Length: 147
Image 1 (cartoon, helix red, strand yellow):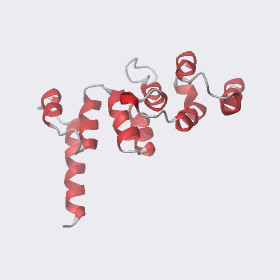
Image 2 (cartoon, helix red, strand yellow; image 1 turned 90 degrees about the vertical axis):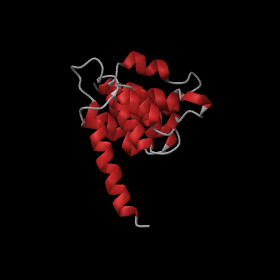
Image 3 (spheres, helix red, strand yellow; image 1 turned 45 degrees about the vertical axis):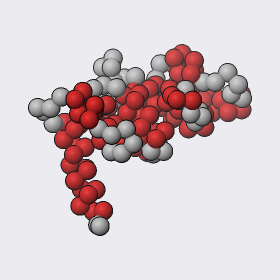
């Protein structure tokens, strides 16, 4: 079977789930399988404002850091209390993953060094594991001092 038409159909479904009207996101979420259609599940979670859960799908379950960053870039609004926390939500997914998954410390520190200006510094630093070496935090502190 040609994956082209299936991929196109799934893309259309995701766009509908992200922006469409006339459906109950909670009901759709309850009907989606837990192991398949993960990107569609993330679209519904985003619609419900459950950013951390949606980012967990991209970063942890799909292992797609680029998709997680794209998600943050599309949703970040500094003047909106709900969406201005989206980078902090991704940092939390990296450094305090659910279900006992191993922390993705290097990805989290990379996110911190590049996007600290889009996070509350004290809240972000609280998420960094206490056993993180000073050398790993060097670039982060350089960026903070330049601001």
